[in-house]
Length: 178
Image 1 (cartoon, rainbow, N blue to C red):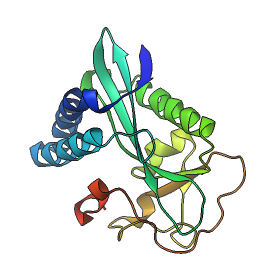
Image 2: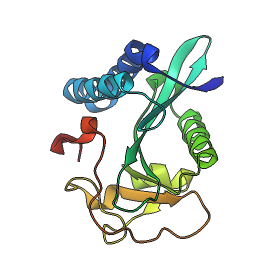
Image 3: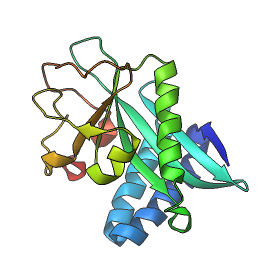
């Protein structure tokens, strides 16, 4: 398997992957929603505000992950991990965990301090994420399931409180994702 950074030229295959995976697991409407989100994110990949990694097997994209920058009044570097997809037939083999860890290691190299995500605590705890109170770091928009707000320090230090609500990339500025 080949793990690598992706760019705007990968937009079509990334969108197809996310549409397929989320349609299979969550239904066609969710597949369209997350497929469109991933297409928009992929068209904005700049390796600063929007970063995307993928994993290939036999020249076929079987998994992908996005990290997008959250901006605070503080100079701390915080990224949000979302969304993540691994082809349905490749799930359950640890590929998603390896892909997430690959991405986290790449962010460490860029001196990113904290990564947050909004998802299933039982899955993300396997790669070091822990429950995160919004009194420590607020989500960009109101959360429908606050128990899914998770964080991880990449510095080895505890996550420090950051005052104020961050702004997210425009693609996530929609309550449907929260």
